[in-house]
Length: 498
Ligand SMILES: C[S@@+](CC[C@H](N)C(=O)[O-])C[C@H]1O[C@@H](n2cnc3c(N)ncnc32)[C@H](O)[C@@H]1O
Image 1: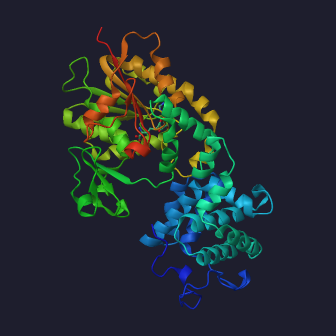
Image 2 (image 1 turned 90 degrees about the vertical axis):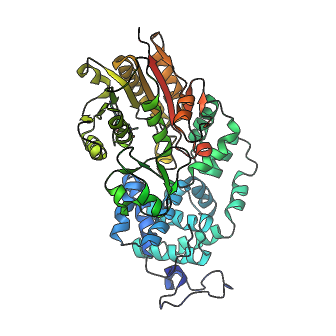
Image 3 (image 1 turned 180 degrees about the vertical axis):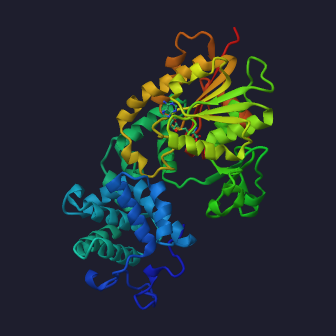
């Protein structure tokens, strides 16, 4: 992502002439009151996203597309706005620590809109290749246009202080003398301390080394690549490949797409090719491919117990159609069940049914049970922080505790509902032991008719490399910094035939 967009208003004065062409002067000498009064539309979009997140508890990924449309940004400006908004949100912990050194009062005493404008300024200065004068002028201009003239001197003065050092020097100063490794990682990689602790614990729980933590945190701060899957037997990747996608190296029928908006591709609009993390593809395929103890064959029945919004249901539905099986996709929230129907639209309709129900009581309606059940349980999403830039600041340690009964209730219901010889996949997009291994252990306690299959081997069997090295003590854990996927957990549990 480069910030030097052609026709970047930050490089031009109000008459349209380029500013500071010689590069000899770092900042405009004009007083803030005489500088840009317009808001650059891309920066305005980023600001709107930050405001919606901090003032209305909105989700950045839901607000951003509407704001981009409202301000009619072209492709390049949309990319700039996305990087600015997501980067400022991800980096908030580090940026607030820097701002704390440059503002003469506690940050919570600033007008929240001014704080958001400052965060946008800091991200441009610290992490994007925006020339400092442009970052200052444009942030002050944005603030004047949307907040008013009042705070422009403060914003100008604070950003000037911030701009005096590059990020590495700020970090050295902030962590200098600090001995607690969790605090250091938290500051350097902009994660709350409790999440750093939780992820360290997660690495160890899944047989990895705690020294990997900084790489993992760093991976959370990078925008994930867009992965696409062609629904087997339904979609093809031809259009996506022609449009610049490159074949995915983890899982078959997948493509990594970095050539812009996938929504313009007909195969994506038709739902035959879908955006889906490679880790999600792998766990769904592993469940579909693993051997049953009952022989399997044609005519199996599959259940996706927590299906909304339907990503894995669509892939499972397509694979089920190929094998002559049927799929029930269950989701208790009606609006999310509607998304599941939409996701399954490209799959022949005789293959699937959508049920709107609490997954903890679904089994009673299916006395014959199911051969394969996916429990993609509601979780903290600690393994997908890179996708949801604000979620690390919103999640609380209590979420781990609050979700525990639901996760156990869902897995227990699946174990009660799977047929003898059948398999249950327990999946989360969190690596935390409280919502992964502990749930599996608790639910299997005293249930001698169930055994854990080798989930690492099952993932290898459906991967292109065949050597993901994700297994540990029969369960498997994928990682952003190792596999480039979300941190998906997989346990495969088979019910014995007798
Ligand atoms: C991690 S998401 C599933 C993602 C989905 N499998 C996919 O790939 O698109 C968890 C889902 O569980 C649903 N859920 C929450 N409570 C539930 C319950 N009691 N029974 C079944 N599903 C539930 C949530 O609404 C959410 O849609």
